[in-house]
Image 1 (cartoon, rainbow, N blue to C red):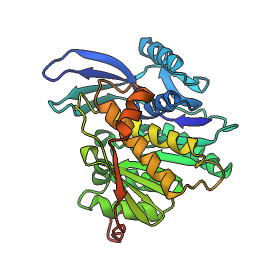
Image 2 (image 1 turned 135 degrees about the horizontal axis):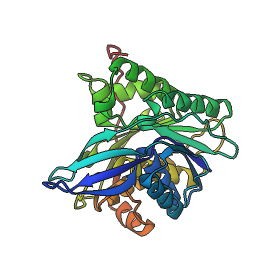
Image 3 (image 1 turned 90 degrees about the vertical axis):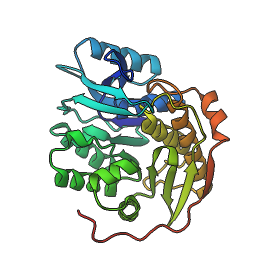
Length: 320
């Protein structure tokens, strides 16, 4: 059983050149939970939703998706994200967000914990997230973390970097975008940050970079994946789809079992291929709802996975 901890958000997505918005249930952790359920993985979502119409919509969508809602807490208002798409389908966001979640979930029966995004950075709820991660480590539950940084909501960059670095060092698996790395460490090459993170604790670190593909830092080497070419409708939820595909593939291979999960290179390559194909499938459609297995399978064959060579050295001058 996966446990996903973090925010749920209703995305209000506008068309390019229009002020009409369409409501879609989202939020990075929720998207990952929904993606895991679509891949056939049992999953619970621990989050906070408002006692309002958007909260009702969220609960209904999760029930349809097959995500357990036993850990959903009520709140005064559902979080909102207004998204505008540019002509290339890339979204920019304006958030209406509060995170006061305080009910640490039960870890009984949990085989892997995934968390990250706004919920792991914004107090007071971020403290509960940190406590949940610590409890997972004490109970030998593998942890996956995705920073999913939103620069507009970071008030103290130094504090954000410190908090992210602590979670990275605690996690077994880290998925991060190149954009997140450059946002957190402006002026430092993303590869240098990734090298330091990979050496700090996780056995698998994956850096995604949109159309350029992804790099997996595993066992002292770098594995690269190039996505297939698809017509991009929008990129909303692509990174979350990547994470869900990655975790589902690792779970199917038995790579998340035990207190120190690990996988052979072939398993990591297969997971990277699945994740890349899942993200590509999301980009070819509107919204963050998971693609079906047939769509993903059709794209997997077009993903190129290859040896990326030796990882670059860490940059010891990087700001902490």
